[in-house]
Length: 361
Ligand SMILES: Nc1ncnc2c1ncn2[C@@H]1O[C@H](COP(=O)(O)OP(=O)(O)O)[C@@H](O)[C@H]1O
Ligand SMILES: [Mg+2]
Image 1 (cartoon, rainbow, N blue to C red):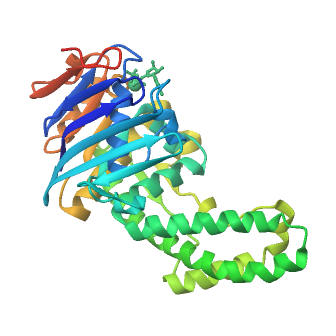
Image 2: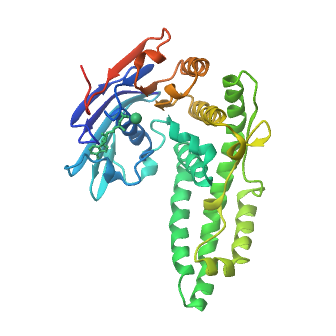
Image 3: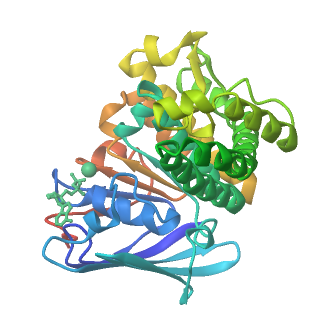
């Protein structure tokens, strides 16, 4: 699948602009702080309903304006899909083929996107939050039911955490078991989907990593080991775990176990990547995981996702840059960089120069 064109109005530093993309390699280039990443962000937002960097949608509205409009036409195996979003100060409205959607789940699965930027090193280096965020965004694109379970889980979890702070202990003790039944059903679904996903991702990431390192290093990813069994067993086990820890959770004022606290192990040559990998190894591992994500989407839906590479070329050495570009054969890629020449290597490229929130024509 690919994005044919993109429309931005009052989005970040853009006034009004239209982009035409090629189904192959697109390079957005220009000096720093001109709007390259902003454009990539709009693409990712239209695919997933989420920004990879704004915590709140309204940050994306151009300063001094009250709303932003973005839209694109995508071409997939079922024909063209039009996606439009209006982002206002108090909310947003997304339309797919002109029909307003009421849940973000209904946006997911129209166009798959994989986003990679230097920030993605956090996937390896940072705490478990980043790894869960990666899993949540990636699996949600593949499974509406995962997305829905996750939203419901988070809602009940928030209520549970508020309840834990209530001083009426008998109310707390009476209510917890009731809520936990629900919570654990969603928790089990989340855990099972993550395990399934990682089972597919691990060999693909290992392969991509071997490709990037010429077989010199071995990347391994493994999920939480405690999650064995089917959804029903898991749900019962999680319920027991929560029940046995009411005191702890009440003392802490929050729920200290469950999929919102889980992590996964990433090792390079058997060593924990978070603590032992060099900057270069971290970068390669993160990239391998992203390339694996591309292939997961490909396997799941029979089509390649749109690959967005934000500012990563300059961070890679020449051999890896070449390998990466070689891997983008056959899929739409949107690259942002400061120097377009660096990524050409003889390929047909749609070059777009960005200056001051506009295309320089
Ligand atoms: N909501 C906003 N309104 C206006 N300008 C914004 C907004 N958000 C970001 N910007 C501006 O966008 C520019 C950064 O754009 P970005 O796409 O990140 O640059 P780059 O071309 O380096 O990738 C900065 O000048 C920043 O001030
Ligand atoms: Mg940028």
